[in-house]
Each structure stands twice: as structure tokens, then as C-alpha cells.
Image (cartoon, rainbow, N blue to C red; front, top):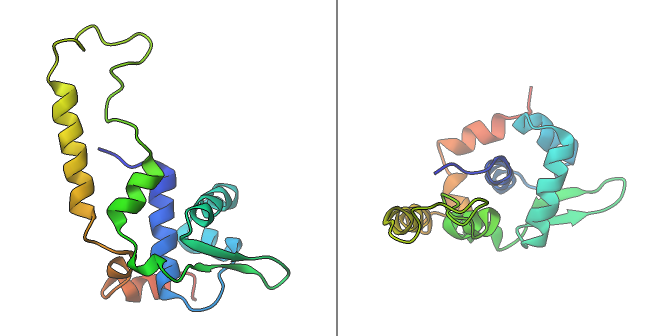
Length: 142
């Protein structure tokens, strides 16, 4: 299974946000995480809608981790960001001709759920703990 790019960027934003106090600007985040500003802004907006980031408008505005976000489950976050999509699209156009008797779809669904279940006990705060914390704190600081 492979996470989409937006999910990857989201997790990196949350990890960085968990180590920083105060506000981070979109430009700072884009620079620290080596992500195009426009794409990062869309990801930040999605994280805000999920209640994981707070945004402050204005000249000295920016974003920060929402209060409850550091205890949020990575499995739950990834589920929310990835949506309900399956590993394979058996019902696509055209639909797979094997779907009526195939056992692969169920096996892949169980594997996907096992993947999420392995991430469930891990929190954003866990991902921002040492030794990652030192690396995260050094990003963007010259």
C-alpha cells in the first residue's frame, strides 16, 4: 500500500507542528518540508477542516497544531485522509471480470485494515518524540 502525496505531506506537517511552539507560516512549512507552497496550502486547509490544525489570519498569522492533535491516532488520521478507497479498484470501468469469484479483494481489504490497525496506537506526539524531534527542530533553521 502506498499513501498518497497529500497524506505524506499532512503527516510531516503534523510532526513539525508538534515540535514547534507558536505559529508557522505556509512559506516556512513549504521551505522546511521541501513541498510546493500551493500544494502545501491545500493540505493545510484539509488538516484544518479535520480539526488537526488551527489557522490564524492576518499579517502575523499562520498555523499551529490544534490542542487535541498531538494525541490523535496516526491510523485514524491516515484513514481520514486516504478516504474509503480500496487498494485495487475492482469495480472500475471496465469492472474486473474476475470479481464474482476472486478472493484477492477480500485479502487486500484485510491487509489494508491491518496496515491501519498497526498505525492506530501511534500518535502525532509519538512521531515528534526523540530522535525525530531533534531533526524536526533543525528543519528550516540555519
